[in-house]
Amino acid sequence: MEHQEVCTELIKFIKSNLLADGIALDAKDSLTALGLDSFSLIEILLFVERTMSTVVPIEELDREKTETVYAIATEVVHHMNK
Image (tube, rainbow, N blue to C red; front, side, top):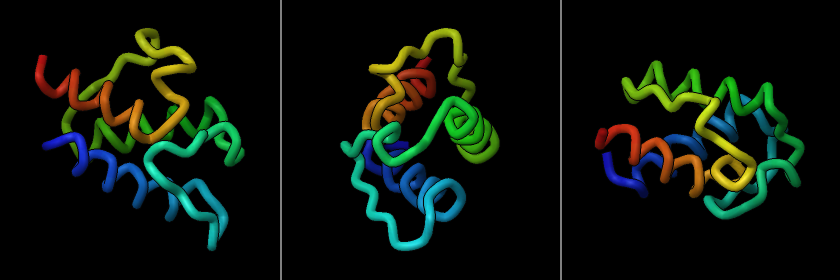
């Protein structure tokens, strides 16, 4: 999967499962500003594992790597290519 495809899938998942209806989400929006927390991150990582067959170890992530969909997608693509 390419970076943009991962971003698209993550945005779909987050909008349908973690955000209230009508909340806009762009790949570079701050997820914490939208109210997502560490439990939301776990759900996102489980989604990645189930649908993209890729494990992104949570211990390798910091706030910078999880602040936006774009940043998470970068980590996902990195681990897909390992």
